[in-house]
Image (tube, rainbow, N blue to C red; front, side, top):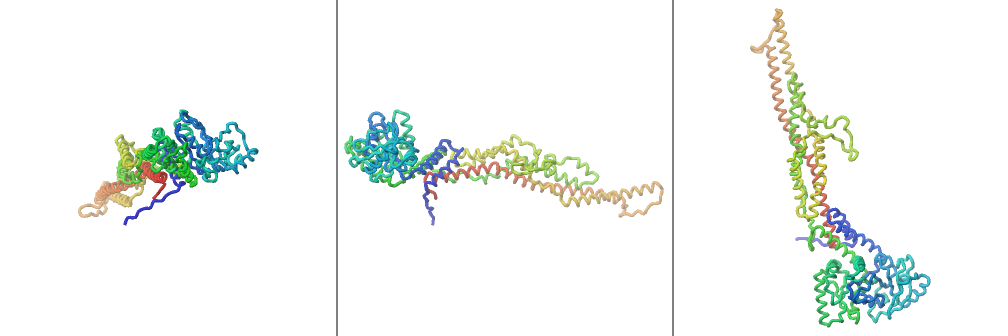
Amino acid sequence: MKLLRRTKTVSLDDRLEALARAADLADGRLDADAVAAARSVVSRAGVRASLSVDHTAVALAGATGSGKSSLFNLLSGTSLATVGVTRPTTSTAQAALWEGSGAGPLLDWLEIPRRHELVNAQDAGDRTDRADRMAWPKEDDTLDPGPDAVLRPSGTAAGAGPGSGAASRPSGTALQTSGAAGQAFGTDGEAAGLILLDLPDHDSIEPSHRMEVDRLVELVDLLVWVLDPQKYADAAVHDRYLRPLARHRDVMVVVLNQIDRLSPAAAERCMKDLRRLLDEDGLTGVPVVGISTRTGAGVPELRSLLVSRVADRRSWAARLAADAGMAADELLRASGVAPGETLSADAGTRPEGLVRSLRDALSEAAGVPVVVQAVARSHRHRSIAATGWPPTRWIRRLRPDPLRRLRLDAASRTPAGTRDTDDADGSEIVGRTSIPAATVVQRSRMDTAIREAAGTASAGLPAPWATAVRQAARSRGDELEDGLDRAVATTSLGVSRRPLWWRLAGVAQWLALATVLAGAIWLVVLVALDYLRLPQLYLPTAGELPWPSALLIGGVLLGLLIALLSRVAAWLGGRRRARKAARSLRESVERVGRELVLEPVEEELTRYRNFTEAIAVAGDGART
């Protein structure tokens, strides 16, 4: 039976942590703007989470003449916002607060200078008494409160003085509202924690107005888009705001104002068409409310919706989660992933299967074949010097040792004055060898092997990550030459140990030489006695051959036989040592290839897999 892994929903903190980790992993690999945007979201989320979570910043955004300022006045039960139809009248955002104690730092962060708190009649009297002690006069704070509100001057937001957290500077008025005939939020705690913002027009002819809208759209907790029947399908709002904010469907409400200008049938058609456009924008499920600020139709429904969102106290978290998801989408888009697709953590190939081909190319470039041949020749050279005919050994010693010529013998690798430790890593300092430099063909083979290894390892990866893997494969290319030379120089070639048979053969050669000398001396003595006409000594024979001659001839033949057998043994031993040296050298070269080529590739692949895990958590808010 197949077991299904249950998906576990992660917290907002985990999503933000995953987004920060994904941005760090993508740094230097993906588009710098996407990485910076992700880090900005993490930073912005940290600031917002540290501010009041008991308040919900709700922004009314819309085009010129859509009626968002009229809706602001209607919901607040005041005439704070100046209403205009044909030209922008809202130049800076202003806020209406219900129970705004503690909201000052949040409004400071939002940079909302014009703040008005809605209070009940009892609180209004208290504010009047406190105004004499705490008010900070300001000429432009005098606003027309409208027929349904009673103005009470106040230098701060509700119940706050300088530095109290409600407002950190002179910022507006405290208003008593009558409820605007049941359309406005009451002051009985119904909308406690609501901060209602009236934004400038997003299509204003003033660039500063549009910039202010863009800034606040990125910061507020809940967005209420106020559209009208004439411009609800305008590409300016759909292409610039609604479609890019598809991730924010949970913190968005769309209002179709001015439905009183349409017949019921026409209003219904507009609502359906608006619903269709929003679905095409990816905003399926976003509430769409038809209202009329002139007649009040639909306003109670909107008010009830906003009250429920404010009472939930989770819009700020949903907004940050949507921001994290949107930043994750941007990182995915920078990775070359099409919308709706995900990154595969199984893409790419671990470089273990690439070791052999890379090792062979690096071995050739490092001169391993040359060293292996030198090991075999050096063994034969030393064997002959140790087991050859003693009178002629010195001739062999006049010939240079093949390993010494390459500076690979023990004396050359650790010359006097070089046995020390490096300050950086504590490793022993080893002189460079005299191995011939790699030819153009060998370098080309090495480069090809590195490219093939990187290409195989990056197969299936998105283009930016595949490029990063290829760059990682060559990131330490300037260290390869020295690394390979050092690997060859420090590899034990097994040539320092003298085989036991060398000593035995050497002793046998000296015995053969002694036999030859004994026979030669005996013959010289016999010749001298015959020359001097002295009596001859007893001369034993071996068959027909006199012993002196037998010793001389036998010693020479024995020496030649030992030399011949020693050469055969030296050739066989040289081949054996060459094979051992080849294995040791290939292992050393393989370690260098792993360290300087494959390990950076593996690190990049691990980085990519960690990125896919982090981006999945940040984007979907779930892990398996």
